[in-house]
Length: 202
Ligand SMILES: [Zn+2]
Image (tube, rainbow, N blue to C red; front, side, top):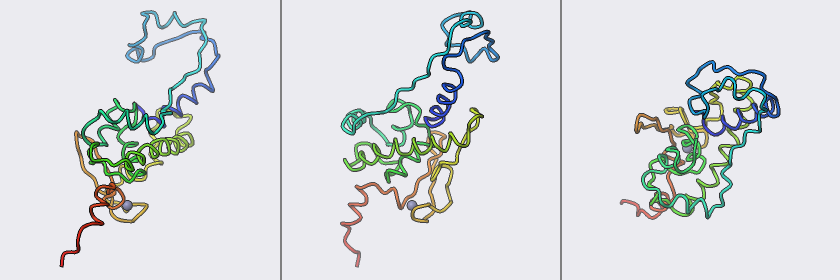
């Protein structure tokens, strides 16, 4: 399943070309992809009908709604962002990018996030997705199956220098998925705050 930037680009691509057009004939080249279609007669039922506009509902949540929506979730913030129950289709790649932009560690537990951390994740999410969508639009279309990675700043960059601080980007694998992050930039406010209060060890 593509992540949000890819889905948005595909939606716009199809809307520009299909919306309002009438179906003259239909053929299921790969029957497995129409398995959710309600009718048995995919190849005849649509004929004569017109394509509508594809609409995806955006995440126009206020910060308060976002915070409230996040509250019941437990565990690490990376898992919450990418498992799909909190926000659909923020995948593994976008999850890393959102947390990098938010300067929040992917292994931070939701309960340990400060109000500032949550605000930063809230603000980073649309910023990353909108920037990514522009890159995807430019480099994917018209090949809608192509996987575009050009917007990535941290994901799949383990061992490379961070674009912000030049320290080496870290990597760990959990549930067979790679997470990349910058240990220096994504400390999270709790750890940053604690570090500032550590007495020098003389
Ligand atoms: Zn960094």
